[in-house]
Length: 174
Image: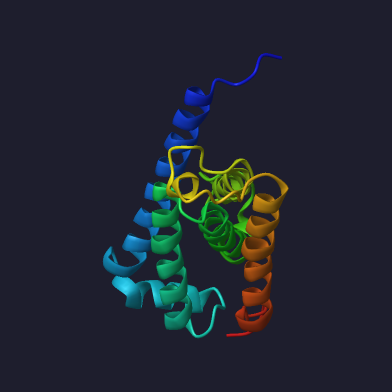
């Protein structure tokens, strides 16, 4: 197999970071200032069992804004990727897991959040490329160490948050 051209690698890692970072920032922005604003997001989170809803709406939104910014500039890339992984895993388990695979199903299936979770793990592993603040600061958080940071912080954070705060209503409760 031929070696990867460094400029091609740097271009695609930049494109991937900017696309995912902008998408996750848009989610955070929308949770705070779009549609139902933060209070609407809080009510939605509360209805899924994330209590207190306002705290979780704020935490998710700030995580999305910060994680997206970190990815776009390529700073502490595994930490930004972990933010993406964490919010996607929480969304996967609280909002999408029972709705089937396809996103076009009622309630939206879990295909989107699964793919974004895997992309977050991938970005954390391959790193930001040379066109990043991490590279300028000579931060070498790629490969297994990048994957470990992304997985432990993202997946571990999601599991811890759900274990402590997720209290969905059981069938028959109301």
